Image (cartoon, rainbow over all chains, first blue to last red; front, side, top):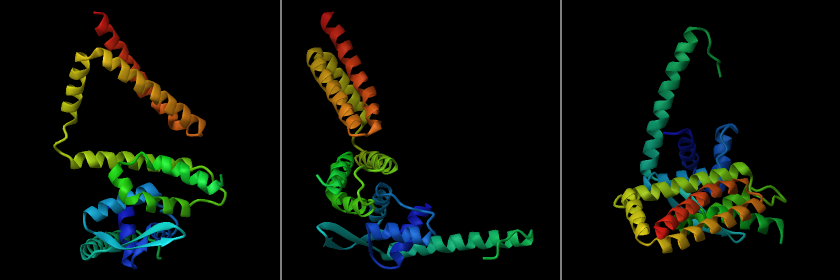
Length: 107
Length: 140
């Protein structure tokens, strides 16, 4: 799973959000490292919808503009959880080995 | 015209590169996101943003083609070229027309400040070349 996909799913795990909300949340989760552009975001949302990992929650009109809120589906939750476990296990191994050679940043 | 209306018009032009199905589904919300992310007084899409939209528009087209598996592009091209060889006069008319249209589009893009308009000149040259070849076929 690509990092952008992982971060989008993580953003939606906190509750349903619209496009701009997802961009802002992903930026915050990643400590400002990942700033999604609109084109990239909607390509990802299209793909995730097609794979049934996310779905449309509701639509609102704010200031004459359409806001479509997306939410995580049960399948999406499952995939995100698998991916998070995998990343945690990889990170744990990396930390343990770095610790052994005394190069780990204890954060 | 206000700055934001100007900006929105330019965003809409970029979104026109997406397949119709994608636009029907997402144009309004992508526009909302783009406008929400715009700076005060911004009149033109940023270069990186335009590039991102164009790149993803191409991806959307490619994705759509893959969905229609029955659509064999090689066969379409072969049939098209055979058809052109049969009707060289009509080919010249169509190819020159498309070439002129592409150059006009490149000029408009350039005038609007989109430097990538120059990329339209290569397909325009190809169309003129194919018209020229069809011209040879007529004389023979």
